[in-house]
Structure formats: C-alpha cells, structure tokens
Image 1: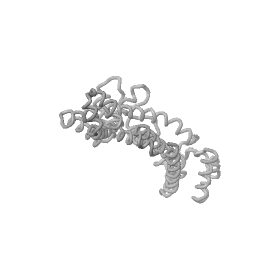
Image 2 (image 1 turned 120 degrees about the vertical axis):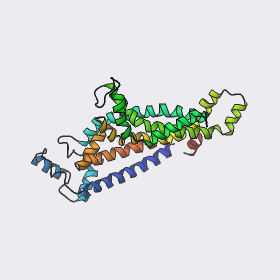
Image 3 (image 1 turned 135 degrees about the horizontal axis):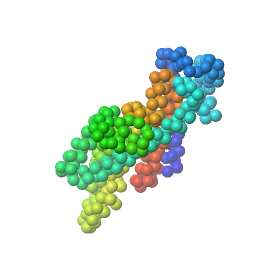
Length: 307
C-alpha cells in the first residue's frame, strides 16, 4: 500500500508541474496585457509588483521566480484583476463554498444512483430496469447547464422555500447541488447495474443461493461490495470534476465559489490567479485519484495484495 501511495504522489507532482508550466506559458501567449486596461492598481504598486515577480523581464525569468516563490515561500502571487487580494486568500475564501456544493451533489448522486442501479440489476429486463436506465440515460445526455435553468423555472418559481439564485439561505444549495448531482447519479446507476450483473453471475453467488442464504444477505454482504467497484473508480474524478467544472452552475445560481474566479482569471488574463487555480485543481484531482486507489485496494483484496 505504501508503494502505491508513493508512486501516485510522484506521478501527481510531475503532472501538476507540467500542467501549471503549460498554463504559465499558454496564458502569456494570449494577445493583450493584463495591465493595459487596469486602472485600479496605483502606478507605484504596479511597478513594485512587476519588479517583485519579474513581470518586466523575459518569460524564463518569470518562470523561475514563480516556482521559487511557490516552493520556497508558498506564495502564489497577487491577483492582477482583484486589487489588494492574493491568490491564496481568494482560494481559501471560495473553496469551502465549492467544496460544500460538490459534497452535497456527490451525496445526492450516490444516494440516488447506487440503489437505482442495484434495483435495476435485481429486476433485470423488467419494467423497473428499463425505466431506471431510461432515466439514467436522460441524466447523462442532459448537461447540468440545461438542468439549472429548468430547475429555476419549474421548481424555484413554484416552491416558496427554494430560491432562483443567491447564497443566503441554507436551502439555496439544493437546486445547484441537484443540477450537478443528476449526472453523477446517472453514471453511478449505470455502473452499479453493470457491476451488480457481473457479480450476480459469479459461482460463489450461485453457491450462496444453493445453500439457502437469504436474498437480502446475498445482495448486501456478497454482491454489493464488488458491484460498487466501478462506481468507486468513477467517483474520485467525478468529485474533482464537480468542484472544478461547476463554474457554469455557480454562475447560473450566483454561488460565490471558485468557478467565478476561474472565469475572471481567463477573461482578465490574470496570470497568477489562473496559475494558482490550475495548480489547486490539479492537486485536487490528484488527491481524488489517490483516494480512489486506496478505496479500491481496501474493497478488493486482490488489488490490496498486489499493491
């Protein structure tokens, strides 16, 4: 297990370094200058910022200074579009909101998709199976940015305690979480159904049935543990994707998460904010994949022995 963790950590470091380095040079290839239309930063502060981070030098110098500040001082730099704020401060303020939204969406997705997929497998080729998979396919095909406005029009406008947009009441998280969790539930349902059908055809399941083991015990204690492995493999990247790719939903529902800052960084060519968000997203994806590998090893004895 320790060898698995070390290998994944080394891979994560290489991938994040390559990702941030690509973003570093790519954002500077975009035509324009982040300081041309910026009037909020005083001239002397602008000169100090350019000198401190090498923005008045060549790209190689900027690249070296950036990584030195990140690795030695833990400094992701200031935001060039939000005067007076640092990238670290922006992430620390907005990430808890995106994390809360992502966790609730993931819980909704698993809570709906897992039993739906298991029930469809147990009622294979029946009405429940067909109906469940039709709903799951619709959830996969309809993107979240379409579901968001639909929920606003047909749910928020007809239910008093739901808001069309905003982030003031606890109930404001429900609709954006539903919009994000619908796709997760659809994928989990299909993966769980496929895994359950494969496990139910195994010899040890037939043996348990022949011995008179109750059906509920067979499903819960023997079949479900192996059936959720494909869904667990999907959930790690899905969770990171919910947080990193929720900026459309956050914009639709006016959620003050990280998505709005990602859009701001791109449109305003904010070097440091974009690089910091990409680095954070990369680390988050690496952590999610590592958690999935550990969970799979814990659920599958053969993977645990191999690792």
